[in-house]
Image 1 (cartoon, rainbow, N blue to C red):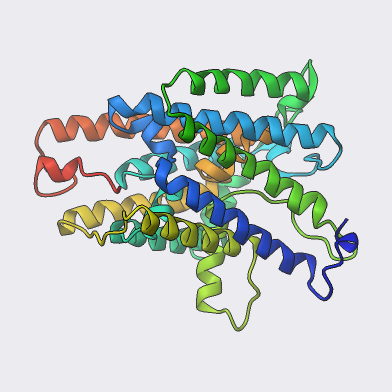
Image 2: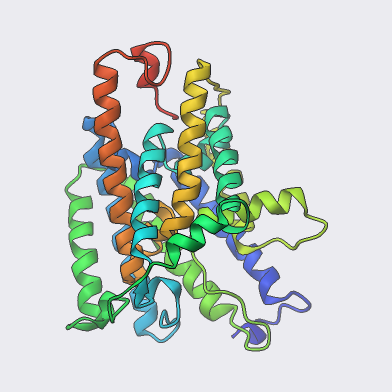
Length: 361
């Protein structure tokens, strides 16, 4: 397909960076005003959880239908993708998911939302983003790599790696996942414009899958089948910033760059850009701890709330489903602990009860 585009001297890899930049730009423009965040759905203020969860599931529904529609049309195939492997590193996924869930509660935002907030002048989010990138890179290729290797070596072979292999096939299971998600979104009392934005966010997932797996497919210069994600892309972005003269930009680096630009533009247009910092050393310590937990957790689980959740679940892969469920469990458990500690007036997240409940956003 790529050869038919007539893009001249540009390679598929270079084209994928531009594609990621465009997708990230759109995501940032949409995610900033809608406050799109999985953490708010799991552990946000009680009055916001239904709307936040409804928006996330609404986007997921469109992502599932779009992705499986592309599969049925023969545009992409997840047969050899890591999300659909039959031998699952269950221990790594569960522990990683739980760690990520705890981390996103400590930082009051999943890494996706914190990336968006970093572009709006939120220095708390920026510090977490940097800590996340460093620890994620260390877990993939640095000091923590032996831990990742040891945990990932403990696998359980389920015989199947995807819901698509179950009776009914991919279409039935896509509908089983997508329809309830869309119905919940419609009943969550979300504004029409926000629903439109959520649908567009969801459709960015199949756009990325099809873009990298079909449009830019070149048998002589193959690139990875990728979609929206923030764990490996954040580590890649950090490495590119540090050593851009020695390494080439990746799809992930383009995606993160696009999200930052899009979120910045959205915040400036809406006049929401404002510098924000930490209130106390204790609060900074909590955020750094949360960022580190998300970094190591995201790698062990195989993705974050976007990579394993919004983009991973539409593949119908069991590993992605297990990862997002583990993240949700970790977030719910941590939220109960944080709420109980705050109620006791321990100053867990800062010097006062008010500070302990202060969200990243």
